[in-house]
Length: 344
Image (tube, rainbow, N blue to C red; front, side, top):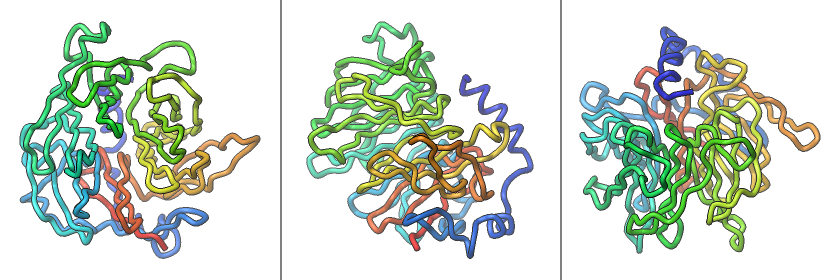
């Protein structure tokens, strides 16, 4: 499905369906507690202390925490593309007016200094910046691959950076390739893309590096319309597929032993808000679903997943801070600010 088509359908479905606090309270479990097993959280929908008039948002796409402990939110509102919070929800600063298609936000510690990588859908570019917005590098559409004839065919949605500075870009709304560059932005290779076979991708929306097995790091790439993650070696060789039946999953985020991911919506309710947040263990087994049904397996395969509690509307990303709190950013959700979830 093309991004424009998806937005149109989702916008129609979402009309008049913004969740009020009363619905959140009624549908979010005992005293607003979500999740299963050892990953349960209390939700706070009013964490953000930002004036909507002064610091508006459109879609809250992604969030990261920098080495100072600040929480950075990326939105496609050009009055303030980046909002910087402390962990209490107080706004510390903001910047950015030049990213109308701001979508992906990745933080990388480069020789002790935090830098950001922004994927802009409208500009068809990846932009590397300082944490206060100074541009350091711009990657245009990857004509070196031989797969693209014009910038409009390339709609990057996410990046991840390896320890040696290699940049991997997921073209999640374009042709679904993962394009690898060196730290200076020189093209190395591409892989994925569309085709018949497990090694291909459909809606390569997110990407991360899984370093939990220190000797065998790998790339975990979203194949959202296939309701799965796919694992690749660091040089792009397909390893296997992690099925997530029913879940239109966004980018994978790894913190400690766990993988976290927002699920935009579910197959059971494709044309209405039906998202939740998944938590997988180091064996890629779903152990908790925040706002979703109780995870269960049959012959080592997960049962279909779906929204069980009307808590989230199109959740798009999850950030895990240094105290194990979660922050959930939501797309196409009536300009709501991120929610904070604290472990119980």
